[in-house]
Image 1 (spheres, one colour):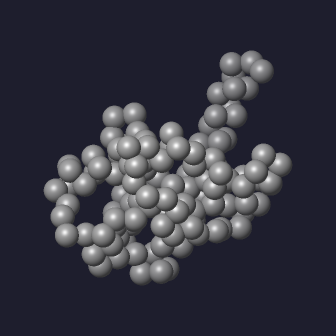
Image 2 (cartoon, one colour):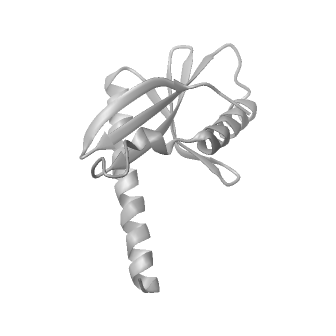
Length: 126
């Protein structure tokens, strides 16, 4: 693969990911959540969506796949990813001086464009 082909592939992947993140945000808005942040970054870590409803803050990881050939996209959220999401969420809570809220980690997947929501998909971990 040439450098330009590799760059085009990455741009396509990022564009597709952003499109699914927008669909996930719309899904949460339709459920009565407020989108607080999109693609929030703490150093080299990123949280795709942060949404809030009343005293609940949800950190959302969005994954997509065009099929099941390589497994379900939820399986892509491995231990290392969970540790990184936990670190980023802690940083968000510290920076925003958040207290008195419940926190939850959700995964939203898209398989062939179909949204699946996994509320409370994992617990914070070190």
